[in-house]
Length: 527
Image 1 (tube, helix red, strand yellow):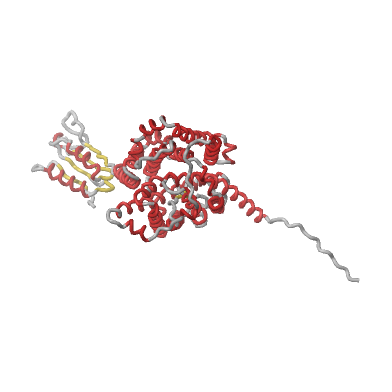
Image 2 (cartoon, one colour; image 1 turned 90 degrees about the vertical axis):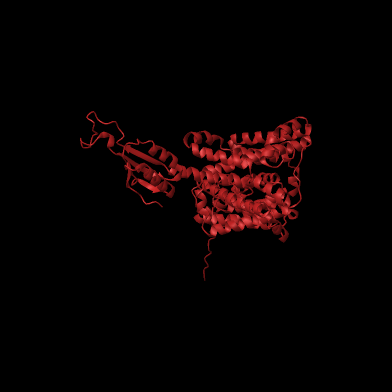
């Protein structure tokens, strides 16, 4: 009789790699939900402050998650519309129209891709930190000045100086209007909650402050039926308008080329710098793979190219969302891709939810974001230890407020270069033999029969002699006694530019005179 052995069924137990994969997936899903909750009010708020439909902010966030999130570069930083470009986008929309915004963003994205392909991403790390901080401070000041009007449901005047100048009138109008006071109370309450919520750490880890503040403000307005402005909703498909040929032609019209070129360059440089500086900051927050700056620049460019094709806002990597992603426990890029999925689901399934959000609450979120852009805590130590850097920071911020983003950043870069040139062009003169003669009429180290009055003065120049230090250098040389011979030694100079070489040669000829009271012992080659 044949016997049959019944095989024992074994219970499946996941292997160690499967358990690790499950743990990673769980962490990324949780982090993506946190980032999604942070991103929704910020995307909508940035869009409203930029003067475009609220849905366009969500479109940029979706592209930042689904496209840029998949591309190589940085593994954990999250991209989307940023407060740093709000002022520039608003000015571009007012100047060229909403339809042309897509064309500007598209060109900027192509330039970013090209710069990444040319491996220029790493060079953005050479931008002075003072210029970047000044840029963010200027953006913060202009953003705050503009959003103070939105806090009271009023219309901003436009430029930074105009908004600042109109604040007294805004205060008077608000005090005289019950509706404006109601909106101001909603916005101010939002700001207070944004400041206090992170202090409750256990709750802040579960629900981010922007979502709590906006949700509570919306609930208060709904329950009390306050007469405040709400976000206007148009629908996702209705606001997506790819730029056409007429939009590109509008940028080439007479008088518009220079302004459009400046706007494109500002989009490109500021978005790239902010993204790569954010990447450097995010890399310090985690122990995972570090950022490839060139690939990240190409990823940001690809995202902006698609945003331009959809007529949406420009994107950058956003430090607020990126830090939230890391702190929420994200392990791979899946978290930022999933956050884009949740944004897409929200924009498609719940667009009506945006229509109940008060504009004043979003203005409060952006005022709070603008305040965080100001280097308040860093200013005093910076002024005490690096005064030149502090001057560059302040000048950049003031220039952005007084003029515009591009010109302010350009001025800051020029000042940073000038400061570096001034600091590196330090030159020092060592003067020997200028002491009083000894009692016997001689000077130590010289023959007794040589008159003290005719002993040469030895002058040795050390450092980098450039035209920036030339006035001081000549003042020191011209202050030497006229009746003494001077031996000028330039062998200690590491650099001697043409202006200094020419001026020193002229001084030597003038000083030599008929009796020869100056001679140059060692001359370095002039460039």
